[in-house]
Length: 72
Image 1 (cartoon, rainbow, N blue to C red):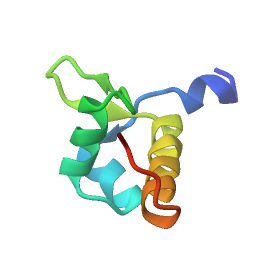
Image 2 (spheres, rainbow, N blue to C red):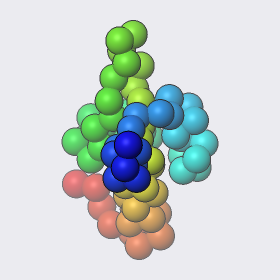
Image 3 (tube, rainbow, N blue to C red):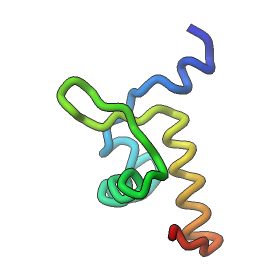
Image 4 (tube, rainbow, N blue to C red):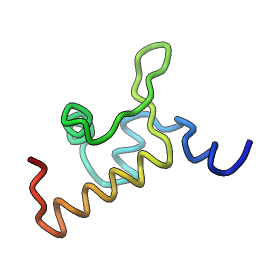
């Protein structure tokens, strides 16, 4: 498996992804509903975030919190 493939490998449940980024799990659910991030789903329908998803969430957080970009 190449590095780029590992980058897309879903590996973090929502609580771990939220802790990695420093947001609440409800924030991640909101981002998903808004179409900003699309985590994979396990067979049990758990959200699974890849390292790429986590980086994207960090970017979204930075844009909204630090730079004041409106999500609308």
